[in-house]
Image (cartoon, rainbow, N blue to C red):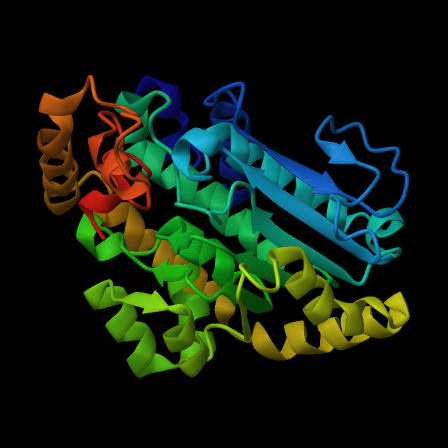
Length: 346
């Protein structure tokens, strides 16, 4: 509570709330969780996590940036530190000196997993408060809205899974390409909350009212094929035969090939048409989430997940268990969107 005591005082000053949330959340992370932005050109950015070359396998792309999510112990769930880093990277991409050399940006996870939402294992007592939920939501709604409004075509490459907040992150991209065995699931309802990062409003725009309502209320687990049918996915690939790098290059190359000014113009036209009244919807969605986070249903869900794992705290990664089994045994992970035992809620 004390860590986020500023939330109520700044409730009427959105920009100040976002800025303060960004700096407080920056201190909540580990040494092995981070985001990396790969650019296809040399950059004078002061950010330590910006590389001046693309990952191996994607070097043929000349006007595309690649944003990689790395948190191997949490299936690429975002810690507070990573949320702040994402905001920093979006700020960099907003700079004309950077985006004028780009047409597209690809978002992907490392280690065969996209993103399992938010990681509350760092300072979990503080992060489960109502004020913490408001701070995280304010920062992520702002960051993903700014990301979505970049003049760059954005593509999420989803392998493994996109759960909870990870599914919301995927909706902030213009396109989603899925590995054939990947899964998308909006698990917020099982946590006793609504979408936290603006994903509800964006999902409605992508799949329509009925499908969005069903996905949010039932936490339906979507296969790649089902996501394709709902138009939540735009392309699928088989990692065993094609590989993610080849799939990314195949999908992105037509966007990468045109002049940046032309690509930016097209994206700005779509942004202008798409954002009619969206600001009001996002604000309302965030208010609904704040009313539920830290409430009875949310706390009951968290407590139930903790009870499932409290007797197995010494069984973090037994070598004889499968990935599915191991994730159930992790003792301090109590949500899928908020990664503390992903299988507790899927």
